[in-house]
Figure 1 (cartoon, rainbow, N blue to C red):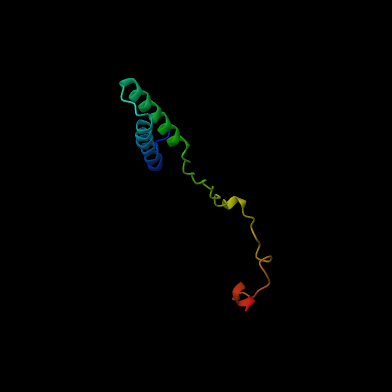
Figure 2: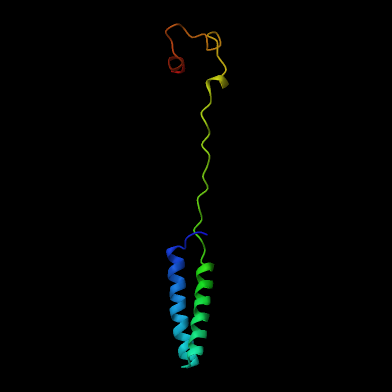
Length: 95
């Protein structure tokens, strides 16, 4: 089971406190069983609110392509590289 986030704890706690106060003030109960019933209802409501807070999305890990092995490379012969002169480079030909 994942650990609750700070938002879940805050929303759940505030819900329990405010719903308990609201139900006690609205019902005007003073008996022990009535207060216990309101407390249990407030805890259930707080748990429901905390569980419905959206979880942060985890980032998908993208796979980094492995470097190609030397065996995958096809050898290029000296004649296929170009008919450039002995001292001329590819950069010199392009310019």
